[in-house]
Image (cartoon, rainbow, N blue to C red; front, side):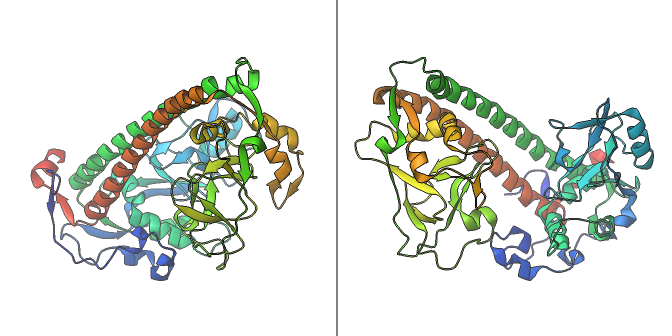
Length: 449
């Protein structure tokens, strides 16, 4: 069923997913020149253009870093460009003299489109919502549509579409440094509806943007509350030992190492992500980063734990995750794997929350020699790890604490699923609306004339 505002332009037979929608690692084989990703047919009143011919401005920021920092002038770099939003949470400032030098060469205006062109965040795009002047680094391009051809609101939606993001990644394929040049940006091909239809399409897609942003704000608020609960219910009693009823135990008293080898050559090869937990490598990296034969790996079963001896954001002394997604999977022997002992006075969910709270960090820091690393790992041995001390309440209290935390985590998980659904819906709409396969009804477009 089409949304009420839409009507089909035509029905085209589809032979599987387009390459930019495929999750498998073989999509590279289907890569072609960027212009080839435009549909061969489109509405008669739409124009096929090279992007540079639709822009009045296509420039980037300074190629020379400021000589001084501090002051009152914003200095925007690629780290500040998120998909659909300017992020000023971690922003730098520069003095007036530096700002005038940079801004005179790259005068970004309110409403311009900002596109990251260098680094890991290449392709991130948003509208400049700042009325104040700011200085821009060369890692970000700014684009301004010709007023009689291209609306910036439509341009930002087009640049963020899966089709164009695929073209951007394709242009960077094989490069040692991920970089998108202004010339390559200008060579991208774009289909331009009439201006009123551009505005109608941009407004419709922005409805999904607002829903996504609102849901993500709710997720952030719930995550902050979850961290507060972890501190109050686990971290503070652990670290301050205010609760004298909690029993002191060594990890090795309640858990046993898991060292079973993957003799069955299970191909569900796992990696540990700070955000996603233990997850299939192909699902996480979109490619395999392990050998074909993984019989030398550990075979981890559902409900068992793995400690990653690598520092990560939010986990300065490594992260401990539990296998929940799959019945079993193969994991590198660089991990320390373990399982709760039968009849151990500890609930599995409570132990997971305990590690997540960072309550074990003090112990891990004590056994980790700062700066001493092996293969990029924290210098924590197996005996060190199983010798760390934890504090446990009785199991009835553990069950009460884990129930509160599980409920809070479930609320976050449901909101993340909702945000993912909104994003999936928007991707589908983009695929239809930005190619003209679906048209907004004329009576609605006429309101924008």
